[in-house]
Image (cartoon, rainbow, N blue to C red; front, side, top):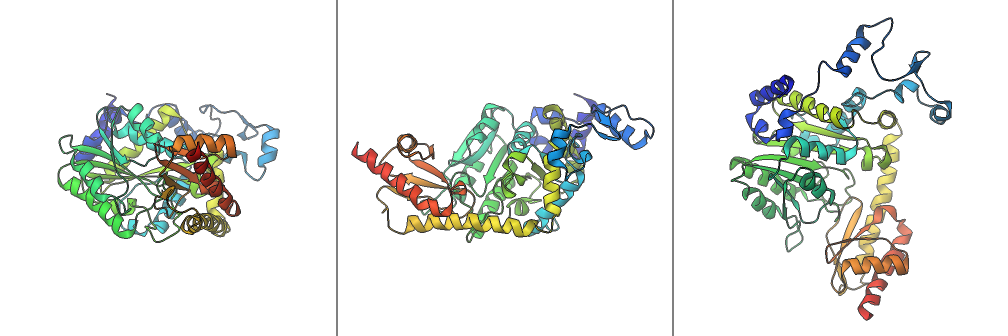
Length: 433
């Protein structure tokens, strides 16, 4: 093992030995090189005042070399904020502003000890970092039966972890905190679990209420008190899109510093929150009472970034930073929020209107995010999906035998009734076939 990795591990052990025990074998071996090209380049940037011949970019007239056909389209920005490499952990000012934003939007973080957000290549990259740092073959990764399919690739296929599912909803369609607790306590012999909490949920568009959130936190705490080390990840991809009476802040705030055996991790980003999907700007943030643990986890995370993508895209970090600093940002974001809320409310009004009855479908609770899910009663979901594509020109997502996901986020409000009319007609077609 590299001595730098050993030093980081010693720091984590000194700060919280339970967190050291959570690390995967890869996580224990990771480090950020202090004597490599990047560190030497940083030293040169600070002290080499005549010539700096260290970094692998080309310069011209004191700025990064660039093509006019590109710069003329981006003339509002300085070449130095576009073409050079971003730091592996992200632009410092962007990280600071994102941390301030987290504190504003999740008040329960006030007074908690948590690190500076580290920039990732959007949220999947952040989840991949968690998998590399903490998931080994045979480790339990717990998430509900209604989930984003990339979890299986990220944790199950890449890291050979064991998937443990529990039903997302109870019989009365509330969040199944008892199912989560049972899944956690079943890992007592393993002594470790990774929990993924995704709210608003993909695919159902559900965010728990305040009491349900308290029950989730209580389940995590109970597992820790039973001697289970828990890495609990708040996958906040759709954070902020809360349209009804639900939690309005990230559970990361309640989970931070909860117990020595609980490591809270927040994965979020501009991707969906600021409607910049292709920019690929996300963040990973750790919470710990120990400054040594936070510093060591940041170094290990930078080591993963250095070993995989080297650093995230500089232009899109600049664009997001510029937006966050704009006095028009909040007003424009609120405008888009109201459009999304209007679409969600329209879907619910249609489904509750009695127009379609409830013999062909019911719907899972939704109050947030981009999606909702129909539970089909009379036809298979994939058969309906294919029928809708080929006969109505309508695309939907089939999940399992009964569930059909509809992304109202990408449908204009005045088109939603036509969409659900098509789904209903498609079901009736198949029933007659």
